[in-house]
Length: 81
Image (cartoon, rainbow, N blue to C red; front, side):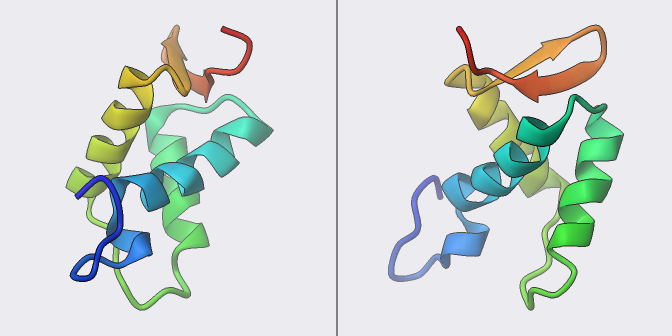
């Protein structure tokens, strides 16, 4: 579930989804809704759809390893900590 495997493609693993999230938040701070919309638009050409549940799981994973920050309603990169 966290890492890709024989039965789980990279774009469905939490690491893969987390990488896409980090690409967005490294550019600018955004709300969770804005982040969701941005990730969805970037993934629109992929065959595998992303559910909101998987998005939140990946975001929670990134927060737990301090890769992202949540402050005043905005998600930002956890760099510099």
